[in-house]
Image (tube, rainbow, N blue to C red; front, side):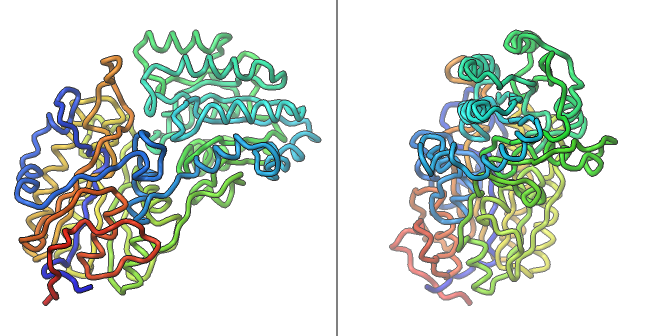
Length: 522
């Protein structure tokens, strides 16, 4: 396959949270002034990409989210998330079921002879994105049946669920474990306290002291405590830690099991549990008999926490294919989206490929993001422009996560400002790509900012959506046309532009209309 004239450098700009929705109410993307984006879209071939449900390896009708989106982008095919095989294990009896899992038996054999307890830490949610409360209930019942004391630490969601729906989820969970005589709720707190990628150090320290030292306000009635927090205007993810009056912290010979579904989940808190000093805490680490996770955690914790299930992995990613073709590639991102690159888009590959460079800029904690909604977009743009001027890379990928991150806050005004900041960056990038005679691709990854009001309640909606996302090609051959497709079709389309054959593992297809002839590059 011949490369098309004027393709290189090929610049791919990934826009997190940039969904397409015609309704304007609660739509930050429609409200924002995006004159540059609108002008580029109007003058260029464009299409819509399915970014949710089966198109990205999820159940039909399920909203898209970063793990699914970036896996499909990198693999060139839908990749079922770890939750799919974990769900099967929790449903099966016999050798393949969770009750027979050898790592779970190892945990029991370590803790029970020493009289230790197991601390289950997980998201109290039915979303099945970061976790699922059913897994917490099943594990609590299994361990309790083995005669092991179980403390459950409920992490409230409020992002992948309605903002104040956690009280219902917690009440249901407490009913589910009512018959497990050795299981007890130890604490309740929001996911912003050390479980999100943008948790600030102060929040992590507060959560650490609650779990490790039982230093937090007591509550006898956790659902009543949630109701009090709701009356103060707090969403589930911002619930301050509170502990049961009987809880005494993590003691010697206890074990901790993170009930997670994503490799980048709870790194802030679990990193502090393993090494408080490195996390900035002048505290002594609890003397644990073991620390486990449901899904293998990403580096640097992956080798220090024993997983029950391996994380997602695949070969023949887009980045690997470029390297095998001898192309130089640069990826620009920020810490908030770094896991999307390493764990998802690259299929878990942690070493750089030949000819690959990755630059990561720090992201502000979520609590500060609303004050500076442009986040790292300016720094990423500066790096991109400098790289274009040097002319050393065939392919450059830049990830702008502003719309998704600010969308998680529920602050529409700040989200609009974040989108407008990206629009300014796009103007600079497009001008420089045009000057270099290259091609610019704008690609949404999953929906978020286009729907910030709950259609059922009219309140704030902070979760992701089932919306399609845009694909826009700027600066390619004049007669080029794009067909509609899915996120899994992006990698094959880019390889087509570069004149490279997609590896057989990629089941996606090129979205360049078949009637458009290839041109040999000069």
